[in-house]
Amino acid sequence: MSGFARGFAHRALRAAALAACLGGGGLPALYAQEEPAEEGPRDALRVFFDCQRRFCDFDFYRREVPFVNYTRDREVSQVHLLMTSEETGSGGNRITLDFIGREAFAGLDDRLEVTTRANLAQEQVLTQVAASMRLGLLRYVARTGQAADIQVLYAITGEREAGSVATAENDPWNFWTFRVRGNGNFDADERTEFFRISGGLSADRTTDALKLQFGVDGSHNESDFTIDDSTSVSSVRSNYGASGLAVWSLNDRWSIGGQARVAHSTFSNEDVSALLAPAIEFNIFPYAESSRRQFSFLYSIGLRHLRYIEETVFLKTEETLPTHSLDVSLSVRQPWGGTFGSLEFSQLLNDPGKNRFDAFAGMDLRLFRGLSLNFNVRASRVRDQINLPAGEATQEEILLRQRELATAFEYGFSMGFSYTFGSIFSNVVNPRFEDF
Image (cartoon, rainbow, N blue to C red; front, side, top):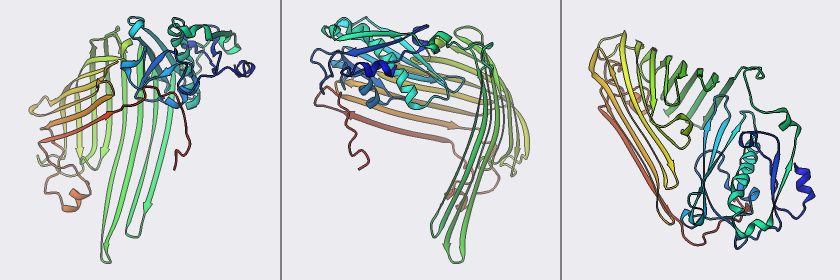
């Protein structure tokens, strides 16, 4: 495709299409007849690009899609381009581009999806997204005076002819994806030393009908502090675990499955913690709309076995307990912003008084032109700390967070705002002195 771009030396745009967007056979490209000015053509389409997650390289998209005017405020745009992303079961990404018409284009909406492989470089993913952005914006540009300055080229490639839709028959891995990770850190000065090592292995298989996830992970942390010539303090924390999840899709709103988990945690006083719990989930909205909105209810019930490192405050060294939980989650992403939250209640069935309630909520809100507000709040009522070791925590254990401490509640809050004013356009990319 780069050969076409070089053939048009005075054109600004190169493009490559994506099979997920077209469903077959070609590479379209848009070429502006003239190199756009820094502010963009006077009659160019005004686009508000709304992206707050992965692959939001605004500079890249402005370079690759230069034939529109990018505005920094939704209220002055003609098209609101909302980009969201989700990780696929193979470790790739499904990126959704929602084109929401405004002003004269009100009611003229569209959606394109880009599905990428796990082994693609960042630039390859961005290039595919930019190609779909050009395709989606074309229908709006065609309705403006700018349409006369646009050409569409189409070419067949061998890769496109070969097809790109994976099936169990032509996938040698049968949709299985494996990941191995490891990390080590060491920091020291004259009086302190910090050492941390962590790693993990996972195996996932995701199809529309069945989702399987298995993983093993662990971390080990050591810290040494020299107080004076005769006094030193050491802190050691380790966590290891293995888990498995299986989920069957019943229809576009119901799912059933279950999880199994075994873990070790010095902080939580758990030599062995094992859980086996089947579960069922209902989503108010179809799962196909999950990138824009989700409202789900997840209920699980199961058995939890615990063997403690130290005897607990309830004089237990080992116990098996029936437990259940209900998790209600909401996530909405709209042109006015986004909101997300969850409520979770868990309880021991043999002792209902031992329970926990967690609540979390957040919002990104565009109040009016130029002004955005965001906040997050979380709170927990804690009544289930059956794992606490007997005896008082030492000063070292408290300061170094070596063990979990008794508490009746937890909470936190954060809030921020941004206000921008001045020129409504943001087309220019100037990376000079970025690291100064």
